[in-house]
Amino acid sequence: MYQLYELVRAKVAGSSSAAFHNAQHIVALERALHLYWEHGVQQHLLAHTRVLQFWDIYYGSIHFGVPVVVLIVLYHRWPQRYRQWRNVLGWTVGIALVSFALYPLMPPRLMPSSYGFVDTAARLGGLGPLDRGSLKDVENLYAAMPSLHIGWSTWSAFALVPVLRRWWAKGLLVAYPFLTLVAVVVTANHWILDAVGGLVALWLGHLASGTWDARRNRSTAQPTSAG
Image 1 (spheres, rainbow, N blue to C red):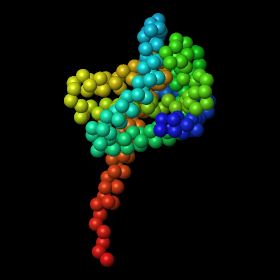
Image 2 (image 1 turned 135 degrees about the vertical axis):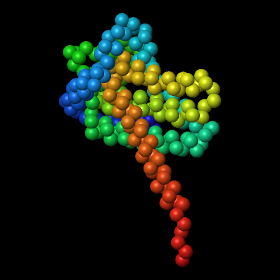
Image 3 (image 1 turned 60 degrees about the vertical axis):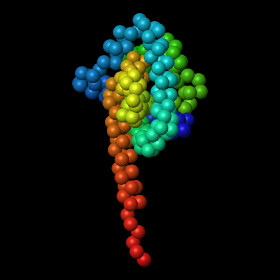
Image 4 (image 1 turned 90 degrees about the vertical axis):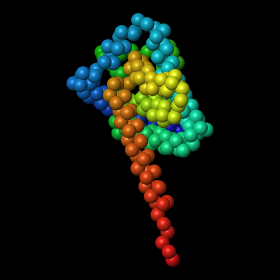
């Protein structure tokens, strides 16, 4: 399923000029809103190679594993909740794909050197650069808005935290979106506003899923007319 998502995402890739133009607007908007923190945060950590390598590995691995685990747990223990949140996830991904097609956005790590960002995975290691080798053919490098790292991590927390009993498990899942925000910023893979976009995509996905389910339930509940 994820491979299908990646292939579709690659098909909606925009041009580099449009992606850079949109990134310039994002930078200007973040500066106006006093949210342009990405460069400063990364600069503080550049001297700490091991820390950045950790965040590179986190960015390239946890993002894919946790939502799968959440779906499996929900499927086996809370099947009704599984159906609800599976649909929310599907709608969220669909909304994100539309955004990728309509609004290509260059991430900080691909901006010109004058902006001062470092592609930490390419320079320091971790899991390696995201556009290396065969991945370059299927990866949409300008699918930054919205950040599905933020969308999926927040989805995981909302889907599972309310039904968990162990306090430490709740705490880990609540912390998960905040840790992910750190990862996407220090690795220069997303802008702050991408994270906001991820939350908006999740909210719209939840709204669309609820509306769809309500209409389907009404249609199935309608009594058949007597012949």
